View 1 (tube, rainbow, N blue to C red):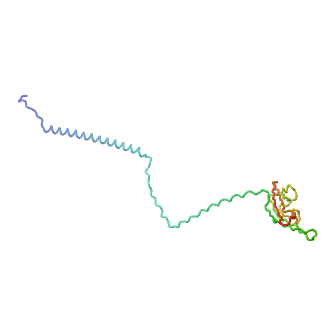
View 2 (view 1 turned 90 degrees about the vertical axis):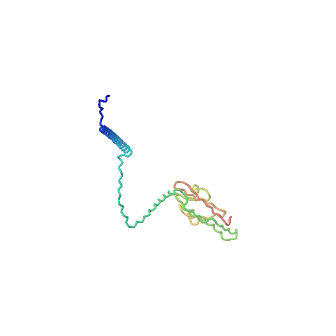
View 3 (view 1 turned 180 degrees about the vertical axis):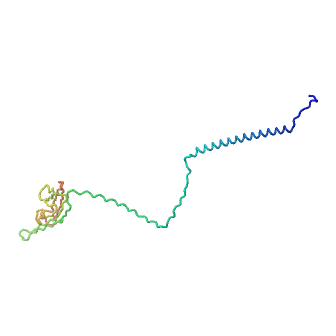
Length: 215
């Protein structure tokens, strides 16, 4: 290049200003992109938070509302005393079944021992002492018949002396003072047999002893 051709130079001031403008535009665009990216990121976070929150807390569960009610002030009226509960009484036991078995409702032997007196010597005179009396009484139960016999056999089977359902020694011979102890015996056994309504026989044997003279 010759010295004759002049060199064109750009003005320095305008070039620098254009460079500054370009930088400002680039920086503004960067800020915009950063802002848009940040906004997208925030929106994404909000959406994720809402999704997780909705999955953890069901919408159907309403928030309970607590209502405060004012309780009435207790009055000073006296408290009624408790009425004692009556104790239930146990039912009485059922009565026992009726007794249908035959036997003796009662029996009493008044003469358990007798004392026979010795008679006077032959030819010596005197009065012969009477034989002692044997006294007893009975009452039969659930019976249709009563029988009496001397000894220990079944009086009903022997059929010796029929008796009423209740009575005493006078009913054996149907006369008063008829039961005399035989003084030739040291003891005498007697049997009374009850015939029940069911035909069963129940016997009672008793003994009278002679503590006196024996022939």
